[in-house]
Image (cartoon, rainbow, N blue to C red; front, side):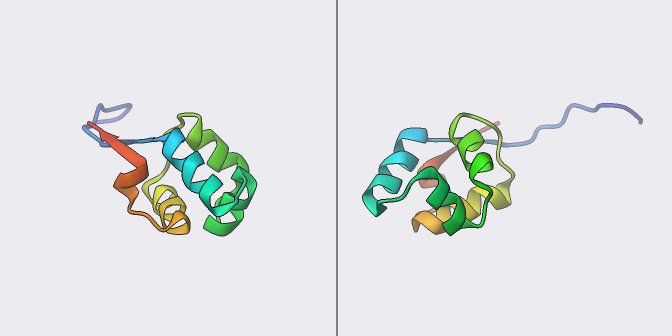
Length: 77
């Protein structure tokens, strides 16, 4: 079948308040979170603003903040 197919794929949504709180606790800006997570700062900002991150990106952000992915992202089906 060609074209778009609807798939049941889990979507991650960032908990912006929790991410910002963790950054503040570390004394980090969004830019610094990007540097520490090896994710481009504009990408980090878009994720915090509600863009759907790639699971690998979510993991990098969580690892930099030293938390589990599900502590800062919710999963929507």
